[in-house]
Image 1: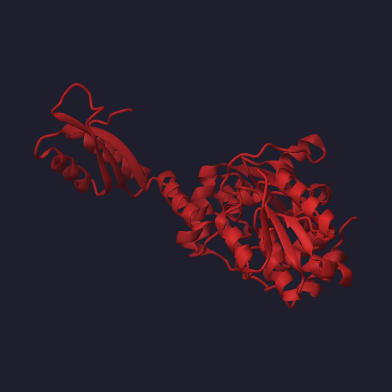
Image 2: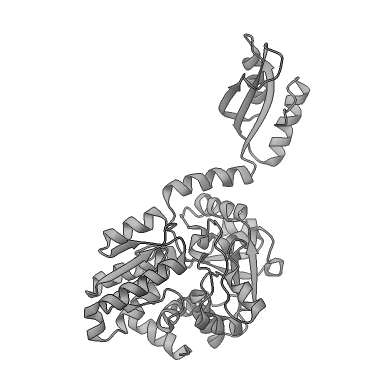
Length: 403
């Protein structure tokens, strides 16, 4: 079954009373750090924190009365499950979701709080899907695919129409790519209305589902690898989504985990908004220099979700600070006699750095029993500041110890 612009327009009318028109503000600080005129489509402002509500509500409203009564089921790492749970509750439709073992805790607990039946099963999406199929066959519930069902793709495409209404002079839209449902619907909507607007996909280097499909000419399975962008880790792009997106997406780029972590940090610091890894990939691509042709252009970043586990966010912030040169660790040898640590602390302070933690390593400090290794974690301004600190340490008799 194909999806048309008429389907997307119908979906927009159908879901209008249950989905917010999310903000799409211009960002001065993000524009300054990327060199483009950046606008963020903040679909993390949806009730459950992601764009997935669009397709979920559209698919639920398309069910027959009998199917509504039997309920629906889906395999999902989180956001699709949340969208189904929330709108299923609003519409009185029972929802069961099968989540793989790696699903973020915040998405599991929120889904349960919204009233869905949550089944934890499988090491990856494929195993979760197989379990969902077994449950669907047993109970007669309708399986709703999270990124490849035509009604889902049409629902996600409504974001593209909103962007065109909100940003009349948009030159390009940069969108995350995992299973492909969002970029398929969005690119179809955008290219059907305004062909000159470029649609660019961004994948994590740990996923690359869409790129693998482009190389093979068809969707192919990819081994699952750990990534901050867990929403993109679908193992393969959807077949319907791929056929639509391959005709409308202009380019696909890839970003590494360090850039994703840094993008999450930048969104938190500069935009005061929390995003999950998948939603950070468009900004990551801009910051990493993957899209130099967009310099000076009006660019919409699809900020598709904000459901990141707080524990993960804490670690991501620290990793982002390290990548940014604002948190560093080094080891030096100091005297284990009175004044040794004070001398080191004085050099660090005079360099303008701030000590967060110092650990003494006596057991592995070498044959000199009067010396100790000091493992120091300090806050700095940037990488240039780290280099200046290292020079000051060496000048004052504290050369770095390579371990």
